[in-house]
Length: 133
Length: 132
Image 1: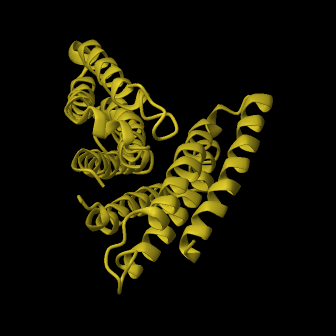
Image 2 (image 1 turned 180 degrees about the horizontal axis):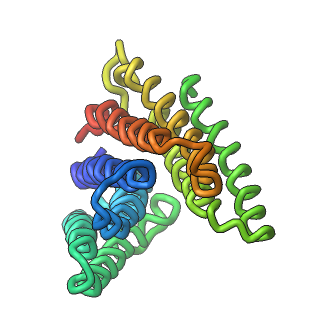
Image 3 (image 1 turned 45 degrees about the horizontal axis):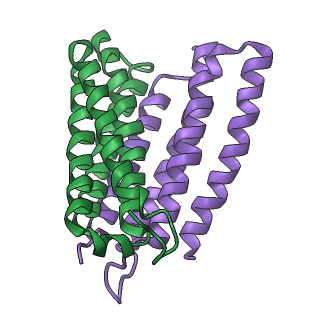
């Protein structure tokens, strides 16, 4: 798979592990005495698994398997938009996880990631050879 | 499709139907303590399990001898994910409704099993994410 897709998938695996471990702690806190402040991490658990794991894996696999004909026409633009989406998505997740003060900036960064990904993938959603990206 | 992927995907479909039933019960009978079970049946039992099954099947081969990585890790991941999730969806609502019946350590075990499943999946999948 392309290098950028591999980075998406590897980062999603990291978020999977982090999100599942946090989830295990949250679940364990219902059955044993753990610091009450642990529930402040619930939003981090959700963000890591929803955006960091599931959405990021979907983006990575899409970049890997969608038709690549248009990539040969505009290779540089395609590569830049994919890497930008990767960087912005992960920065966004981190900012959202840091708390309320950076959450809005994080969501804005994730929106920019979605836009960058859309620019990358839009022209690839077509039969090979018929696209005018 | 490898047998383990078939197991993953068939169980994912069953969890999908099960989640819809639990969601219906929760809404119709106003059983708010079923909410975590409903959400996790959907996001772990259905979505994550489907991803695990399809990724195990479709990701690039690890090697000609071991195309899908380390089989014992993959099988352990499947068992831990489903044992942990099943334990959770039984013990968590039970503990909320009848704390005297369901001891807290059941939830600790359920969480640990699912966390280990996540680690196992990442360990087995990581070497198959190959740049070409």
